Length: 183
Image (cartoon, rainbow, N blue to C red; front, top):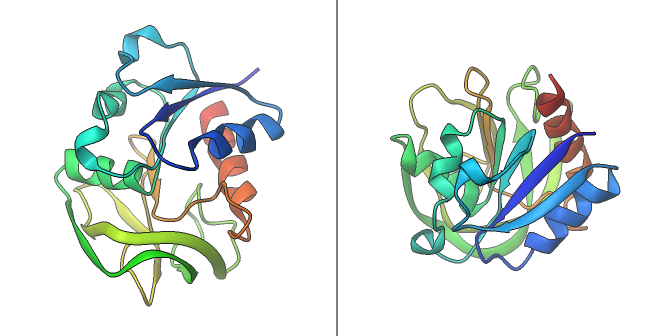
């Protein structure tokens, strides 16, 4: 059975990320973000959202864990910041429904989504510049980088929250991530 670890970065939806994965029949474990990566045994890691970059503990160390990583909101921003991208304040701030355009239909994480899909996202902070090796996979009128992927390193990120009911195809993101983890 596939096992996914959800790293808790103190986000308000972290328990929903774990629940969404469990509902797909996956063994999950919610762990504190101070847990050393060498203490886990998992096929993939989800870096949860959260309120502040300085409260992400050891989350950046999971980028070297040799398993696929999915960053959600703050988790994606952490990936970008750690690997040489740039994160900054968004122009539109808090949570809202956003229409996202999928720009890479070959991407293993977002490629099977509808060409335009409605998501629930916060844009208080966002990725402003992709790290080297990453491809843009989704954008919107609100944010230039709604999703990104580095398929060579199996690192993925979405600005939106696939775990909430307001996101139309959230379960597809988790299903696609599980497929990536099973390869």
